[in-house]
Length: 72
Image: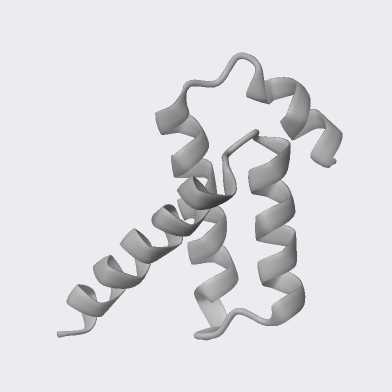
């Protein structure tokens, strides 16, 4: 399945790739936690989409800030 994401990465713009990571993260968070294995799968998805590691971290950080604001 990751191979299909890697192939699609060539035609997707950066905003679409970021939204895919955000969406996957929120799906994984549906049970209010993300297990280590789930985080690894999310990281694998970011690699398949050719998102640099530092950018992947920034996406997750932005999501954490957004989620914290939703709870307050």
